[in-house]
Image (tube, rainbow, N blue to C red; front, side, top):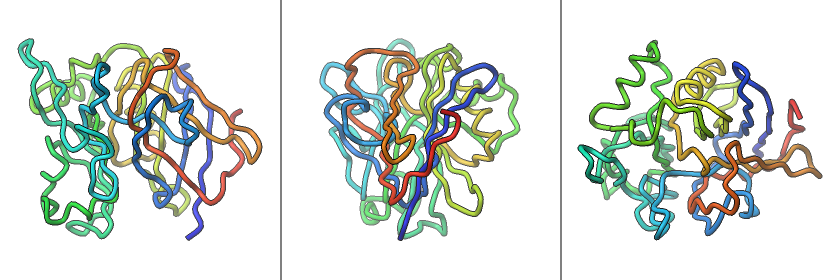
Length: 256
């Protein structure tokens, strides 16, 4: 099946945004050994990680298997000053469908905690990537949104959810009759900024991924030009996991 992707550059409330719009069927989650910019792949950085050992601290699964050590569950929240396992928002793509769904979000500790998956049906998870829930279908105020993610079970306050920094996210939207994955980076933004921008695009499910100096994106502007960006540059930062796009065709990017 032919697939397509397109890079876009824009702004939202004065904040620079770069993103890839990609057909669902050309998206995967992969392990990388360095930065997105040096990977030779197209896409964005993935989930949280331990900077000393490179073990992942969030879900990063492809075809039912963790792409790197630690990628089947989360273990990065500080609760009462102690780092301990906790649940995180995880975005899933199921093939075959689980409970009639091809895509969904769920706050879980392990990717197999999703109802109907378990260890028996783990291969139904085409890919899954963990971060912080965006609650895109909820009509929250900013206060309501932050309350929803900073309390149990996510404890997202430890990742600076309100601070202005580089942000990365993945979301789904039905655009022009196509099942589209949005891979997003934004400069000097809070999670609320990311959420509201994605809602303006009609996104209905998604999570924020690792941010700050980890936010990285690599894309094609056209058939001959490759672009890349770090909204909060941190030279040579390794991120260890990546959401990749491998389309049949790259459309000419917009806004560049």
